[in-house]
Length: 408
Image (cartoon, rainbow, N blue to C red; front, side, top):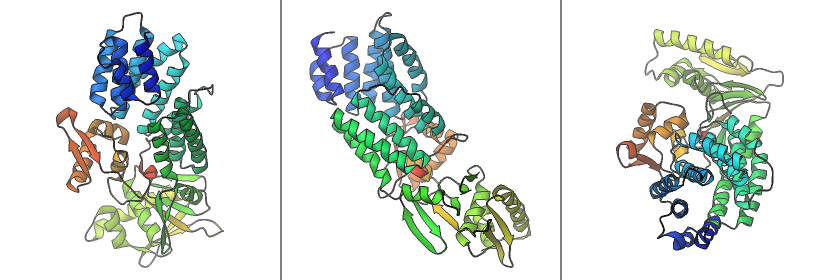
């Protein structure tokens, strides 16, 4: 490999894409095209970067499998940055097999970290945590160690575990300082804001206050009954009831938690759960059926008692636990979509549907509603259309991010 290619590679490792382009900008051989593509990706020109990397991959000969695998890995990283979540999986799997065959541990680690980040974007936290634990703890370059720390930090955040998240962030910060790459240090500091910003709101009786992630964790492990409107669950200690797929039941439970220690009227419950303007005999009959289902779901945690004016939530236990309601930092039916867009990346409808675990039509309806409210905007048309939102400031979106059903 000639001196210009070597110098350009070193510049890219140091986070200096302009320095790399000065050395290879006028060259069209495969190695130079690959370095130009990576440089353009670092500059944010993702479409141009993908084009250059594909040209480089086609230019390498049949014996240059390692070089082609590195191009595939770089192209997969660009696809993730562009939130094209459907493509990277196969390319990364192929690249990993090649790296393993050649003993290229550094690039294999890089490809594994990209796989984990894709899993996190899809909400598959269990798989991401398993893949992260399988990473070899051997000495890594500072750049990769910082990325590994950020991945571990994100997993801990999605679990709601503040102490492991703080430890992972410290490792990432130290590694980023050793790598001395400005963009990487900025990414670490931006990630750390999630630990100090409000992540949820707590309602207990007539009091309400904002909570950081560590405070949310303390509430969730308490002996009280916690109705979590961020994840749509109810829990007491280790007992957990998931109601994310039962919106009517969770709407009833949330209203009962809001009214605790008092009662919620039948009219109020009917309006909240069914959107009924007037509660008639049919609505009351449906309400009794849904409350019966809710009783069965939350039976280990609390009972629902009929009162003269409606229904009341009564936690089980001799220690008379309280009922606490965790609310998201923003109230919006499409808060999960806003949380995914909060990072500033442009998402396609198909990528949002994958991350949400829903159909594209559902994602489109949510985006149109947010566009009408002035909260998101579209770029382009047809298959090239992407969606952006203004950054959400003043609170963390961690608890709003989706977790795939059966994961996390």
